[in-house]
Image 1 (cartoon, rainbow, N blue to C red):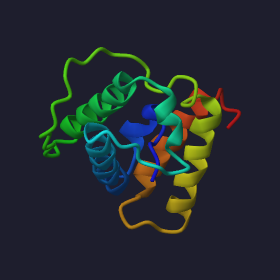
Image 2: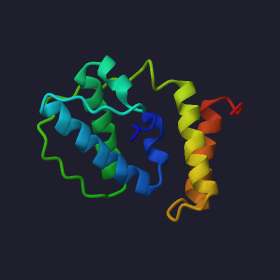
Image 3: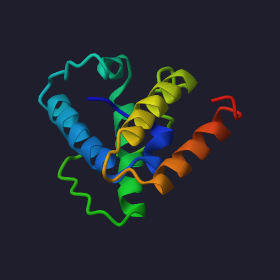
Image 4: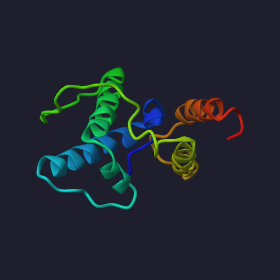
Length: 133
């Protein structure tokens, strides 16, 4: 389980985007039931106000709309106020970790991870990192 760096959402292969929705729904269900999902890759989210999670979920929803995917939202998310979600953790170091995780998926032949999807992600990453990635 992981929350992909929020700036990578537009570049994720469809399967990662769909899985991210499922994972966010599970996290929200736990939040709603007063629980804390415990996973080493997402435990940092408990250091933030729930509004950060709502912001992340909103960005995910916007990407679903952009791709014309159906987005069932049965949760009461409340009022959305935009903020960069998880600003201390979704930094350049985390962007790099996510980039290399996705690079491995591409290089190992993930079926929906086409050369075109990789090229866009790679170009975005190199631009963000000043071509030093």
